[in-house]
Amino acid sequence: MRQIITCIRRHSAGASLVVAALSVCTVWELALRAPHTSLPGAMTTPWACVGGCGAGGSGGSGGATAKWIGKTMSTGQLDIQGMYSSTATKTSNTNDLDLRFSFKPTYTSILALTVPFASKTGYLQAESNSPPITGLINNGLGDLRLDFINSFGLSGDLSYDFTLSVPTGTFTATYGSDLGNQYLPTSLQLGAGLYNLSLDLGKTFDQDKGMILLDVIGSCPFAINVHGKNQYYNFSKQQLDLMTAADKKRFVYYFKPYGENDLGGYTPPSVAASAFYGYTGMENFVHSFGLMFSAPLGVAWIPSLKSTTDYNPTPDPDNQVWNATLCYSLELSKTIFPIFVAAYLPIHAKTASATNAQAGDVYNIKPMEDWSRGPDWNDVFHRWSIFAGFKTSLF
Image (cartoon, rainbow, N blue to C red; front, side, top):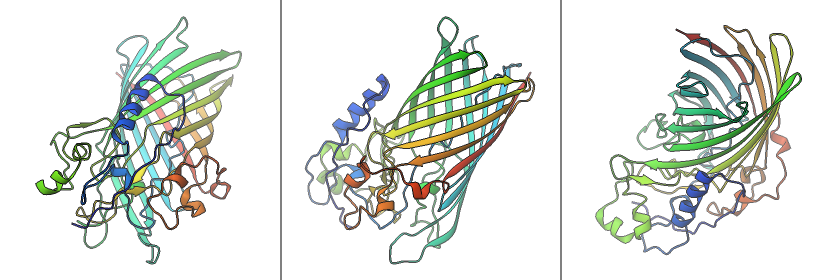
């Protein structure tokens, strides 16, 4: 196996407002990725070492999931919501269909399962001196989501929403003639290879002809391995013995309280906030306008595109330190079969790949966590999402 390059990852404070569950996750993360020494041939933190030039980053979705705002109510035992979305960037296009099945276990609560399907197309330039590979396509089932929503307060104006994402979508899809050795970039994978727990706290203000909705969200990825060890990097006993105890736990484990998958890709915790206004003054229509803002509490790392014998993850050159999204939606609020359409336009911070700030040192995370860079205006209108959805009830 190629000798693994070691390096030390520096911590970024990130945003300061985190809900209690997210704080616990971040404390675990800081403890596990603190700088430590490593014997030759071993490795430090998995997201501290990334190989390849332009290995293909995850970028940022910029609010790729629409927030349905309307005044429809459940009329049956089982509610069904279908949401189609198309998200376009300069280098890729993603089409999603999310089917959400929900019911009300109590008068104030909702329990739901979302089954996502996705089709992704894009291109990859694995090395700066090689031609791009075009026409890459990946489609299938994404990561399932379970969520529980409960309203409380004197008028039900407060709510919390626990959502658990389950890694049912593949994160190891391959391409090329040697399918066992070449992975698709993170942006074209259907899943993250991780569980993710998020908490959304919401507040609704009723207006004369409308409503204001405010939300604060914390998200914490983590890993579970029922096999007890990494399934893609079969390190020998001698290699494991050279690792520190902390390093060994990343490859021989049942649970990791931070977001590193078995290929070495790392997803940091994140915080987000949103504010929407819905106008209900028109019969059978609800217009809504909103702003969403999100920020990761750290830098994402992407795995090597090479074979499983080359464990060499690197910082994501497309990591966005913040992402703001302008939102517009319209619900045709018929009682039996409401229809929803929306358009979302993200405006994000300049990335290291956009400024070439990472040139010469692919392991340097400082350019990716730099908040001083302004918005990437050159990417505005080259990255957007449109949505179309419906709701109905059964039984």
